[in-house]
Length: 196
View 1 (cartoon, rainbow, N blue to C red):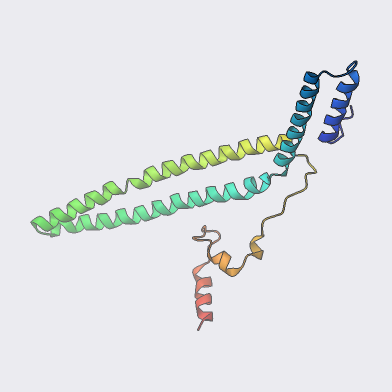
View 2 (cartoon, rainbow, N blue to C red; view 1 turned 90 degrees about the horizontal axis):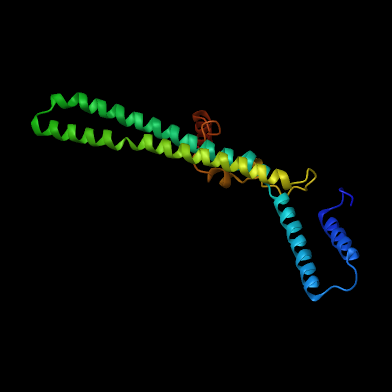
């Protein structure tokens, strides 16, 4: 059987070869079994074509890296905010000795509670690190599975809208930007000046 044939033709040829090798008429059990085998072959061919049509390159090249970049930015911004909070606490601690009795105790108690609450940042960073590791593991497994099914000449599915084709409203509605993609203060100042 030639290897270059599409899956459907290869399946049909295999079924014909089995049929021609059978001597005499098929029993009802053999006919049912043959029908089930044909249906199973069609299902396998359909599943393979669906897997091949997946846009794994978009997932692996765009979505997963974007998600991990966003999570890395969350960790970075959370750490920065936590450091600013801790710096403010140190300032309050420096003022506490200048306060009298009860006021000094209230400030010291509040500063202690803030220090304890700031431990969220370390825990959050660890949990986000686990999510990033899971996303990367998923990316590797999806790529491995689909590479075994996707033919090199598979026609690409409809591409997503390119970033340049998005409307201004869509671009503005994207939420906080990663530092590399965010507008600079000079760009924001120029935009605001254009409204005057």
